[in-house]
Image 1 (spheres, rainbow, N blue to C red):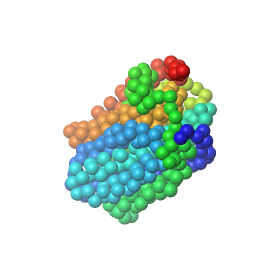
Image 2: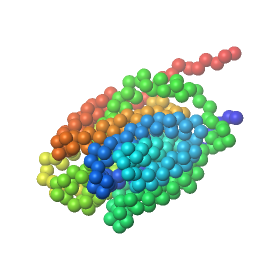
Image 3: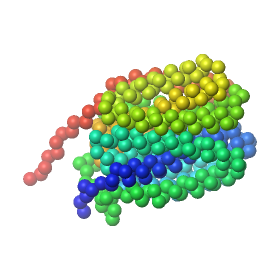
Image 4: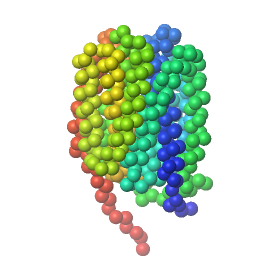
Length: 406
């Protein structure tokens, strides 16, 4: 059975994809609000909580490779529906875990797998296959902006749920909300994937993977994305506790995370739009260097609610704005046939960085009583990422023409 050239309407892909990302990313961006309630109620250390979230990020990245392969092979619908169910189970298990090991299995492994199939790698694969190259970077920016809006929408909502119902019941309400992903997934049911039909491709999975892994620019993109994960997950998970340690109220932390989400709506959209008109490597380099500058100024300034809000707004503008240009470069270099899988590998590097950022935050805090060392590491890594993105080549890779047997 041959693959049809029909595609989904762009408005449908963006509406359903953006709504799925809004829910999935919105829920996970608020996990830092549970750090102190859970550790205090269960008498666990911050490292216990941080390790579970670190495992979540690592699992998310690793599972993203396989969810991307499955989505490229069988379509996104089945992957998204399965992972939405896992998301609900993971959040419910997170609420009732009685030991750090069980908490890691639910909050870490289950939710990590769930996020792999309900976030960018799979959604961007659908966008790549259904949106023309002339609008692809912009469309990816719209989807990333939706994830940011989810943070702006869901983080205050999660703070309200915790204060109103308690941390356990709040997680159950979130579990119910993730089930809304299932009907939205049917809007991403692509022609050519139903009934066992799959697209014809010029490359096998292994050929595409070997080509990418041996390509220098792909390696540099992975290195930069590692830094992105380190910075954003360290800040997202540990900043609420950092602010409380310095005498600021939980409301300041909730507003700060919401501001990150709000300004990231604009940052990701603008980054995606600029990616249609200028070199994406330069956009990425600017973003990473600007993050380092913002952190330096934040640490030097007196810590007040106003300084927190300014920092959060600036970091929000830079937060996930790396996502559209990074994935658009991958599509531009290698094409879209294996985009979910290759995006999954790049994102795995991001999640290794996330693991290191969130775990080191908890570990070094428990050892030193301070987050200072991790802030300094974040600054240095931002400069490193700015430099390694500059040599990236964005042109389509040159492949030898296929020979056709007589």
